[in-house]
View: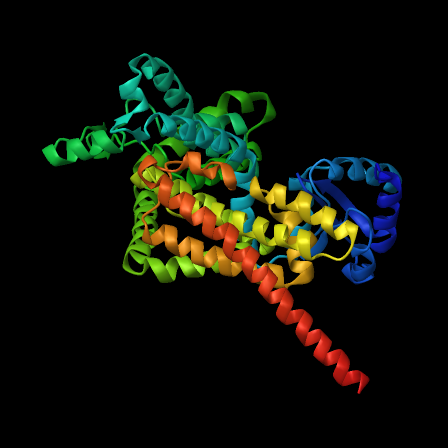
Amino acid sequence: MKPNYRQIAEQIIERIGGKDNVEQAAHCVTRLRLTLKDQSLVEQEALLEVPLVKGAFLNAGVYQIVIGAGDVDRVYAEFIQLTGLQATTIADVKSSGASKMNPFQKLIKVFSDVFMPIIPAIIVAGLLMGINNLFGIEFGGKTMIERYPNLQGLWDLINMMANTAFVFLPALVGWSATKRFGGSEILGIVMGLMLVHPDLLNAWNYGQSALKGDIPTFNILGLFEIEKVGYQGQILPVLAAAYVLSTIERWLKNRVPNAIQLLVVPITTITLTGFLALAVIGPVTRQIGDWITIGVVNTFEAVPLLGALLFGALYAPLVITGMHHMFIAVDLQLIGQSGTTFIWPMIAISNIAQGSATLAMLFLAKNVNDKNMASTSAISAYFGITEPAMFGVNLRFKYPFYAALVGSAIASSFIAVSGVLAPAIGVGGLPAFISIVPGSILSFIIGMVIAIIVPIVCTFLFHYVTTKRARKAALKEAA
């Protein structure tokens, strides 16, 4: 039966304190995102009883109602019509809620605002790299390319397409970060491209030149020299440069007469920021990035079992708070520094574990609505979107969520000890195996099997224990 989206929107409005309690409203793939005037007016329990509502929570000053892909668009359309509000973007709603955040939440919000718009490009690149990986899998002692040399051209083409987003990653980040910091997006793109200009050495050529002691430089008026070093795959240099660029541009716009702004502001902004980026910002942030990468890598190399156990157990709770967005930057930094990441495979494992616990609830749930929600949410989680599974099923019943954390921790530990790596970020679910380094695919698939079986078994076990305790409590109360 088709949901009555207008009626659902009416019930949501009623349970969040009425339309006068809503300042702004937007939506993402699965959630309504609202800024409310008074959070205390929300009737949380009643809201969770509204059809299609799978969960609701406050995060970083924004009240989020989990509805699910597809349905959220239709509910939002009715919501806007009923409240008389103007349709706004997620960024607008986040900005409205930013005043209620602490400094750490604001930092996480910056990462979220910068990386969320470019995730589709990164995922596409990861999937294409995954397809390319299939050409490199050995069977019978030979790879597919070796067996079928005529596939070389296709492999080269896909490889070029896959590498594009990573080769020009600073341009993507420059665009998104400059937009986030209030600067001109086109200048952000130019700055990002400048940092990967062909005249600048990439990491490989820089290493070769350093070994020879012959690193080319820009000689600035005989006063000092700037190394001709590019920042391909680097995140921190372009983030910092985008902030500086936006600050300089805004400062100039407030002081330069309108008649000559187009002539003066862009060239001054790019020249100053470009100089600072290559002379100061780049070297400093590259060193910071190296320290972060070395710290993360050394920690996991020293105690991979403990590190993976903690990550596998804590990643899903971080999703609830929104803090998981910072791992995108760490992932990309690792890929830029070493060509692979061990973090993203564990993220994919966490998503699979949440889906598996939800799948178990398909058989344990008592009513049809819960069963339907479990089936659709499990499929969503298996393809990388875990919010419906977590908020609609696992957190609501609690023990499936704990079961998923146990499965994620065990499976993450296995793939970490097995040295599973990914050359890119792909779809964080069952299709993730194609985005794993060919030599690690078998170990990752075993990890996937663990992430499927353990949460299902634990969910059934926790259900039995929970039910048994409830029966004992009921008997004791009756006596």
